[in-house]
Image 1 (cartoon, rainbow, N blue to C red):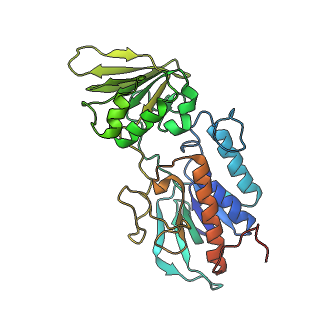
Image 2 (cartoon, rainbow, N blue to C red):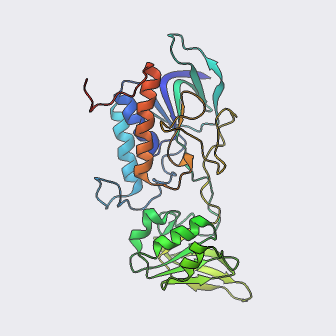
Image 3 (cartoon, one colour):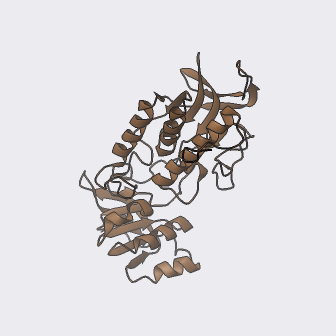
Length: 327
């Protein structure tokens, strides 16, 4: 198997990974992005982006991601489409020219030997679980009300789930939607936030109700088919948006076999203020950290912080070098 040496190997080609690649490439560090598929990440399946600074709200998430990746490539980053099945961080491999030890990234076709690894695989680990969910993902089906809620001003939407994330996202949607149909398989939670949600004038709670299918016309969501416990027949609720929080978002960390990389109790990768994991030279950015702030601009910010920390780490400096300070 071919071994390819580089300074920085980024696992994941979303906004976090592409931002890191942009900065490290500009710092003359040989950078490789290894990405499973450019069309399936959280940003790639977002139908419209309206809250990214400096970008008009008339383009898709995929278009924005393509621009980010293209910009990184223009500065010298290499983009490779491949599945990473393992990383090697337990045994340090000495670099032939001295300096920091090398870490390994394994794919079916090549091994990448890097001075630094960036984990940027995101948190869309839950496969579609309802009929029509995958078909209409990005076309009315969403996992992020903060991202997409403003597109549903005066519309009817459904929120599926009983967890804190579902409640918080449903509360957010009440600012925009004409009616939020909250579907819970049981009676629903009774904590303070849940009771606040139930008390909203534009919220209709559907207890003991399960989602059967997301309905649409082939282009966008038009309704949801539900089954109410005790009723023999199913019924359709007319909605234009369906926000699903049944299993939550799961950080994609299956390729991390090393116990040296600490995970948080919620499954996200632990990092310090420089996005460094518990293994020197290994960084984690974006939704793999499983923070509640799952936004493109936050992921890009993580990427910038990591890139500047990586440049400091590889060069052996004590301080981050910044462009706007001149001494």
